Image (tube, rainbow, N blue to C red):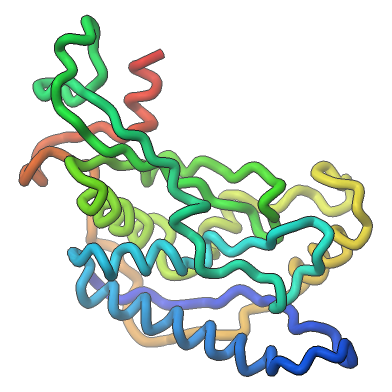
Length: 236
């Protein structure tokens, strides 16, 4: 797996004079450095469950804030809960021959774990609905296997930052205020939207060769395994 660049999204620091004793600028730099270490460790060992889990759990694609009532700055940023927020898991029985949920139900004898990827738009809080990035959806015989394969797809489709997420799923129009009428929320969101890249890790090359993982059979990377998104349409 080739290394990909890292562009950290801009997160404003708390306003001066708020009597907060924590060194937020240092903590922000620590967060940047920590993510770079996690991403590089994953790229060096992408078949390891621990490395894959940490890659997903700390990925900037899942950055969000807990409430619309809190300012969009470093103090309240949630940056290490990607797995609990961004992964929708289902445990299902499928037909081992077709790897689908078929009818009659007696044909479905093989247990699989399905993971769907949900990503928030930039500036979103827990109150907002995330977008389903269905191209990354994947399954596996075990939770570990599914997480490893999902992390591989995230690295391929999204990379090590959230630039692709922001391109494909931009925030709602600030002027129309389509999500909430809280003026403080929109003011803080406008501050985020005005930011520029603050950290660029120039080493490595953009990955063009690793295929999106669509396999999920036991030890059968060459066999086609349809994503949960495709299977959902089959079930309906």
